[in-house]
Length: 84
Image: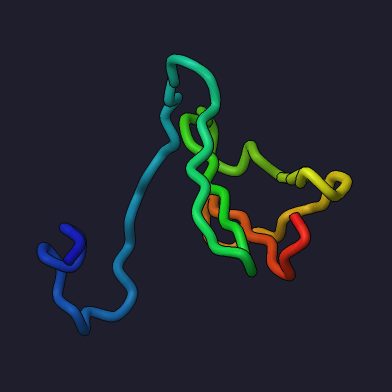
């Protein structure tokens, strides 16, 4: 359960909130976490400094050209259909 749900009433309606973005400095290079099976692959892009900075992900298989992946959720990208 998120801390926000813990400190607020679950049926409070609209709750005014103020926020601001702060810089997030990352060290090292971009990292990828790959998961999948013979029918699909997901790639999670990690260690990226800004939210929304990654706009396109492509994957190249040993028997295929570069193919675009589709956004799944957050920085998780997916591709299906095999033949990678």
